[in-house]
Each structure stands twice: as C-alpha cells, then as structure tokens.
Length: 242
Image 1 (spheres, rainbow, N blue to C red):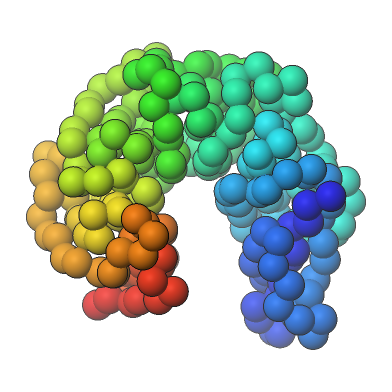
Image 2 (tube, rainbow, N blue to C red):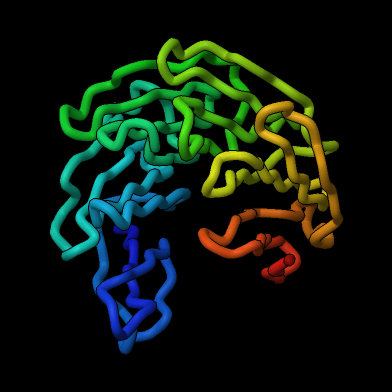
C-alpha cells in the first residue's frame, strides 16, 4: 500500500505539510494516510478545511482529513471511468468542487460532497496533462500540457477559452500569484516564464535549471505573501528568485 505522510512544520501551530512516499523523521511526523495502491502523483491541501486531495496511478482521487489518519473520506473515479488521474486541484471559486486531469487528456470537475462528476471539460484529444490549476479568483481552469501548450477553460461551460504555445518543450508546471494577476510556467526547455493573465503575454523569461535525463523543471511556486518565486528541477536543485 502506498502511504502519504503528513508532517508538522510549525511547533507553535497545528499546520502541516504532506508528501507522498517520503519519510523525513519521527519528530515531525504527524501521521500516515494509507489507501492508494500505486504511485501518488499529486497532492493539494486546503488549510481552510483541513482537507487533503491525492491522485494516484491506481486510478483514484482520494479526499482525506488532514486532522487524523482515518481512511479516506471519499474516493473518486474508482472504476477509472475517466482514466488515470495525473493532477488535481481545488476549485477556488467553489470550495465544494475539485478539478482533476487525466493522462488521456480528459478533465472533470467533481462535487466533493456528493462525489459526483459535475462537468467534463472540453478535451483536446489524448494529450497528456502534466498540471491542472484552478485560478484563485476566476472560474477558470488552466492546464500545462505535453504538447508545449497552456490552455484555459471556463468552469461554467467546460469550453476551451484560450490556447497558446507557451514553451519549446513540454509544459510541466503552473502557478498563479495569490491576486490572480500573473501566471508562472515551467518547462523541460529549462525556462521559467511569467505571463500576464489578462493579455496572456509573456512578460519575463529566465533559464532556471539544467537538463537531466531529458527533464528540467518539475515545479514552480509563488510565495503566498512575499515577492518570491521558486522552482524545483531534475538537476536536484530548488531555487528561490526575488
């Protein structure tokens, strides 16, 4: 059974972070969540509701309580009706919903309370989606895809509203700043690019990591309160930029 470990990162608060398949040490270990039967590919945590979502190569998306080590509150896509999930995120414009992307290019918005599929987003064919992201203030889903594109979808209709070639290689990661004004993307072309969300234009680009085994940038992130951005790469480096 594959395990998701939860760790404390502040002794003064009850905050935690979660990691799949890694064990840091007993002094900070808060608990282990068991249930998946294959590799866990994505995690997203809601501090407001103390809930954790995980997606796995076993075909399921699971909703957990981060307050204890009880079994999953809900299991989605048990019969792999939409495929194998590759990425998951909470829908910021509707706290009861989550959005999941699948390795076959399909995407679905699920109601976490009823466990039902609410809307399937328009598919662009069997294109691997490396990252799915919910915009923090608008009803928009954004995807990073293997075909070098970033795509934008309307959560109300499921329709594609914008598509752009964003990099010279696969787009692997996405992040939106807390105010929803800027989009950041990372790619195996070794670059991090910053985009204006309104105009969809690139306003900054820099090389962040060296390539290793045909991979480069695996993740990017905005600091929630400060003017910092971060990236993690296949070259075993994590970098912070001002």
